[in-house]
Length: 401
Image 1: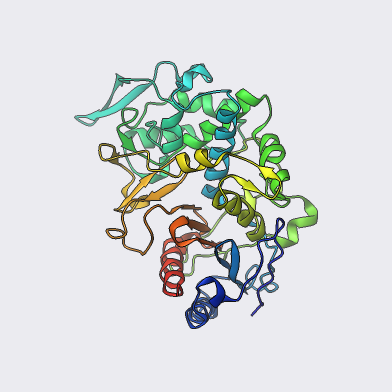
Image 2: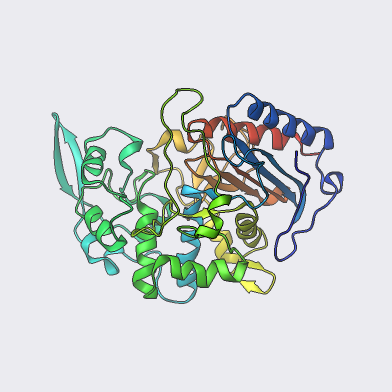
């Protein structure tokens, strides 16, 4: 078992757990249960952080970096998949603060291929195309009400078209990928349904169009460098290969082969919705910036009211929740984050006003301002992601004094 080793830039200091309102007994239970899961060969390793009031009260790296490999180091590099989305949404809101666009703008203003979207309606076993009742807006992209979807989140005819078109291929440049996406019908009318999908990939492309930079270059210059996120990017270099965390080759529950993206070479498509790799320390810096209202040390990324705006619910009561298995009852969605509306209803504990998201390989984070709480977990176990996210939430909340 590794001891806590906070080494964050911009000094998120370590604190005695009791000083920040964490129960040592509860934290010991969290450690023991995660170690039990590792010993049972259910997950190779896990890294966990819990902070309160801007101070780290708990930090552990347990198990192995990869099956049969060395102990999990504090600087392991993880594929964070959809935890890319909050970062890319932040990038776009930086351009809003620069006066370059409004979130009410139609997407077609920046990507003309979206000028005349059609909605796919299934009728008598056939797919009919009907005009969209209004344009897709930037806000729709940020809150996933654009009508865009993922091919793997359902079996609708529109989603089957996504699979046939190979939307999301890392070998296709972003401009080409987004143009192909714009040719496909929408799953729902814009603004009517929360459907998780390629919306943030389009956000990433808009960042490129407005800034004149590649998405990776913009993120490095405007977010990663100012925050000291030196190990975060769309690929990693050979000198860092040995730090890549890996899953089991086969899912421990189903026996199915496990294949994650290969970050050892620069992709043609810098996927705004899921392409980044990062470390515990790097992502914690991004979380700190959010927690402290958009600034960290001397770096000002966004204004306090912009963070408040992004982490408020943007769905309200009239937007249908289409991708129900990804947004639990009692939750809405902001601009890049899920947002908890109610203390109850969801099948896991939490605090109204907290915001969060995760990645398909198992990484997860949340920030609960009312509890002055930040929590981060990094694993590479796609088949067990819901199990460990739920367990982490229960055990972390049980450790609050």
